[in-house]
Each structure stands twice: as C-alpha cells, then as structure tokens.
Length: 172
Image 1 (cartoon, rainbow, N blue to C red):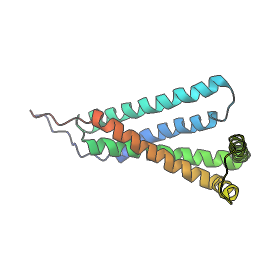
Image 2 (spheres, rainbow, N blue to C red):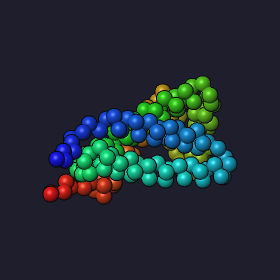
Image 3 (cartoon, rainbow, N blue to C red):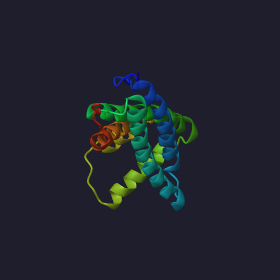
C-alpha cells in the first residue's frame, strides 16, 4: 500500500539550503557589478536571469519532491519569499564585509557618482539632501537597504511565479 505524501512539509530546511546557493549567486553579482568591463557587466545580467530561473527550478523541485507534487499559491509564494529572504541574509553578510573591509571606497565613489549625475541633470535638491544621502550610504545602512530590497523583489517574483507553479492535488 502506497502512503500519502505529506503535503504540509516544513519549507524552511529546503528554503535555507537553496537560499544559501542563491545568496552566493547574489553576492557574486554584487561583487561583479562595479566593474567597468562590458563583458562583466553583461555577465551580471546573465546572473540575474540565472537567479530567476533558479528560483523557478527550486520552487518546482520543492513542489514535486517535498510537497507531494502539489502546492498552493500561498505555499509557492511563501517558499519563494523565504528563498529570497535567506539569499538576502547571505548576500548582506558578504556586502557588509566587502564594504567595510575590502572596498572601503565603494560607497564614497557611489555618492560622488550620484552627485555628478544630479549636477549634470541640473536637478535642484532640497536642503540637507547631501547629508541625508551620505548617512544612508554607510555600510550598515546600505546593507540593510539592499537586504530589504532583495526580499521585496522576492515577494514580487513570488507573486508572478506562484500562479504558474501552483498545482492542485490530484484526486485518485
């Protein structure tokens, strides 16, 4: 007699394991981003596509191998959200180390480039803008902002992918 697969399996172990590999890919993408080499810049876009395809594949693998072949919209969405949350945590740790110890001028250069673009576009910024921007560009603040943005992007991707990945339980 065949046993019924448990469709209420905890997604955390799988999301942590697969989120770790996505986090390494997120980190690699971040480290390659400042390069001025055109080939490396194209590679960062290829990595973004790979992240999206990996997210799809990991979620389908969770549905098929660990969730008994069926998954609801909510479970697919929450799994993708968890994937990006754990990937963002790994990536945030790498970014913090990179910004504080490896490339300490990264944020200063980013601030200077932002000011240059604002001046070229002749945009009038409110008083105190430079102080607020420089405060936001501390390594901790920058890392926390990217952690939140990456997690929100996971939520958006989850809303897009979940309807296509969901599969109702087959009645036999």
